[in-house]
Structure formats: structure tokens, C-alpha cells
Amino acid sequence: MAILIAIIEIVIRALLPALAAGATPTAQDGARQPELRSRLTEAVRGRWVAALVVVGILALSGCNRTLYVQPGEPVRLRETIRSAKVWVLDANGKATAGTMDLPEGWYCLPDPGESQ
Image 1 (cartoon, one colour):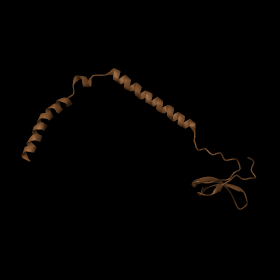
Image 2 (cartoon, helix red, strand yellow):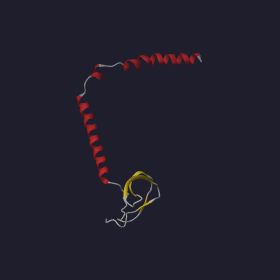
Image 3 (cartoon, helix red, strand yellow):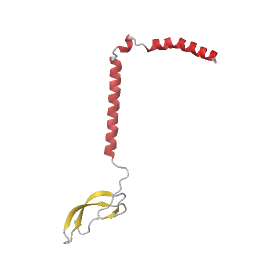
Image 4 (cartoon, helix red, strand yellow):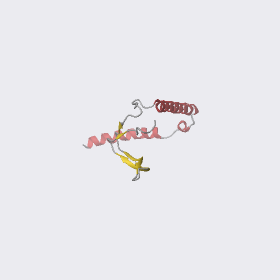
């Protein structure tokens, strides 16, 4: 076991100065590199432009699963709508503005008496 520790110690002592010499900064490390900077700037700008184009195309393309519902057809709610603005008839039959939760599964349809 002592021989193994001695071998590891020798290897570490041999490699440590080489690693330390490679880690010290040189004059070239701190030098400005305008060509590299301009290339990186152009690459980043190009990617931003490409990303904006893709986002724009996706935003303008719309939903691929659009379903046309003809006017006057009832639809069934797929999820609960919280605080929906509704018209409620009071005791005198007058329409009064109110809010309510429309539960999932309820049907919504237009009033056949209203003009569309």
C-alpha cells in the first residue's frame, strides 16, 4: 500500500507544475481580438434574427386544429370558465349583468330570438 501511495505522490509532483504553468495567464490571453468579437457578434445577431423569424411565422400561422362552428349551433364546454360575464333575468324578467362559473360539460348556444 505504501508503494502505491509513493507512486501516486511522484505522479502528482510531476504533473502539478505542468498544470500550474498551463493555468497562468499569458499576454495573449488578455489581448483584444476584434475579429473574433465581430464574428461572434454576427453569429449572435444571425441567430436572433432567425429566432424572431421563426416566432413570427408561428404566431401568424394560427392554430392547426381550428374547428369551424356554424352560427346558431350549440357547443359543449370542455373546461370550466370562471367568472364568465352573463345576463341573468331578475324577478321582473329584466336582464341584469352578472358573473358566474360555467361548469365543464354545459352546453352554450345562442338565443334563437336574437338576430345574428
